[in-house]
Amino acid sequence: MAAVEFRNVGKSFGQVEVLKGLNLAISAGEFIVLLGASGCGKTTLLRMTAGLESISEGEIAINGTVVNETHPRDRNIAMVFQNYALYPTMKVRDNIGFSLEVARKSPDEIQTRVEEVAQILNITDLLDRKPSELSGGQRQRVAMGRAMVRDADVFLFDEPLSNLDAKLRAHMRVEIRQLHDRLGSTTLYVTHDQIEAMTMADRIVLMHEGSIVQVGSTDDLYDRPNCRYTAEFIGTPAINCLDGKIETTSEGTRLTGLDSPLPLADGYRPHDGRSVTLGIRPNEMVIADGGALRGTIVIVEKTGTDMQFHMETADGTEFVAVVPRSTPGRPSDHLSFAIDPTSVHLFDRESGERIDA
Image (cartoon, rainbow, N blue to C red):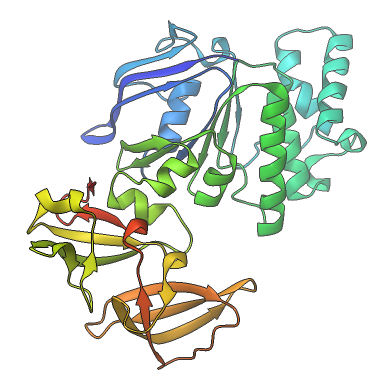
């Protein structure tokens, strides 16, 4: 395993700046997920780590050694690609052991290491098949085996589960995380799927338009998003965002703009008059008479364990409430929701940055 550090790393393609002065330190043995929408630069950063893309500015260091000019084969990095990139004419055992052949390892060593990896991945019975004879999940295991056999310092995964069905993705998430824990390797994993990130990562690196927005654990990003972008990206269903204004009176501090004022902690007093966006998770909405927020049911979605009421306020603002499956309600019904002031997130309406009491 190895520590990885990005120091003011930037990447440009001509006049287009793809990555903007990124700084990130990854400890040896960490499972780091680079999360973000398409085009945020996460795969470019992964490819730069592997040496498949050049660096426009800054440094990438592995175990303290700057590798900007180091050839990919000399970085001791293993990468699993989105499309698996298996050799179709080779059997599974030859696909897994190919890098060892290139490194001129002995046939006995190649056979031993291939069989060890195959046993870990539970693909021993597939070693004499070709990729065309494998399912998507089996091909994914072979691609992982080809990376594992190298005994690399750092493992890189570029959206490896995006081609699999939902059930298999869930299964492979568990397998990849268990594999990481068993090997104790340093792992950088790229995905646009927040569920993958939240269930697998030691730390999530959320990216947007070439910059790092927030770094932290799943709980950090979910419970204390540092900006509206993080709050909206993390969590399913997405957080509800409603406009309001902080107002201080002789009776205390409150948020106006809802159907009735929402009391706030006195620590928000210095922000009197500030226009804000209130963020409230759908599962924090509680049906109650005389609540701070009222709306009309537009759609009811049944998910099995609960239901989602898609609501619309009188001024056309949409929000979602997650309620017990036994809750009565159908389109055009009017409901009122109580909001616990301790469960809300407030963001500056213009900058989107978090406001704390």
